[in-house]
Image (cartoon, rainbow over all chains, first blue to last red; front, side):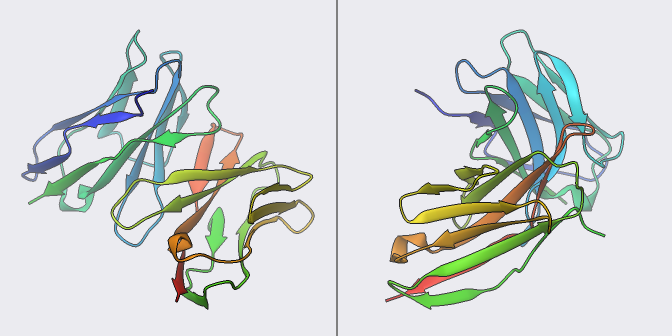
Length: 111
Length: 110
């Protein structure tokens, strides 16, 4: 079975721009979570969606938003990018919103 | 106070050694606990869930101590391939939030 897929793999944006990251979960998984990981730190929880509804939100500003589509894929949107948004963005899927399986991530660089 | 705290290490151990990592959590309402491993510049991979009664998977044993609010991971007979960063994860039921520790770096030396 295919694992979690994310696109794009790498992305370079300028401060103030907007970015959209995409994630497709493992087939049969209905929950998707988004994390931000900066170098030397563990992933930080941004959002969790289950059955297209937001079930959890981490401590991130309103510039971060997400949604889940009927096919359970998901998008993470970040507006007004800051240099500090440079990080690896990880998507994780789970069948029941507990044991999570991660995709390879999108590495975002903001210049 | 951080929700989850881990000793970052690094732990450098010889092949065949036994090594243990601990992770403390602050929210007593936490219900679900996990260990992940992360190789350099790769995504975290689920190693094992941590059950209240403790659980074992081959050379790996995970334990939960609710009274002291910590989870542990024991690796026996360390292999070179065990070299990685080990991350603990705690689920906070309020708001369905998942908190990762900063990770503990393990290097197994030949």
